[in-house]
Image 1 (cartoon, one colour):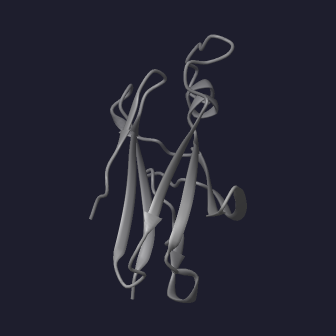
Image 2 (tube, rainbow, N blue to C red; image 1 turned 90 degrees about the vertical axis):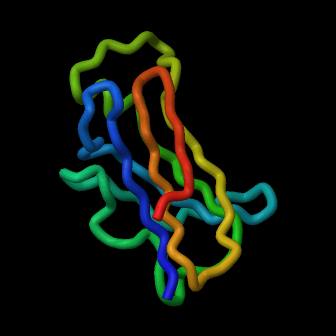
Length: 117
């Protein structure tokens, strides 16, 4: 059975992004259907899969990571508006039987992602 998971690492401080807010949407044409809203745990991970079982279906999805609020909560002074505020990642799930892991490496000025394992 497939699942969708995420993990965020704070590359400015060299630690998991504990407490960062994340939202998940299913994308249908130009509409975004909200599916989940959560905060990452002490290890920078969601406590459970974002999708699995019957909720894990092929399609287009968007994860939105609240990067600027996370760094502000850690005491980082950011300009207004911040260089990065919310980081949206659009991705596709082609095979619902597979594990899709979407990690984010983030600082107030940069981010990267990849399909993890």
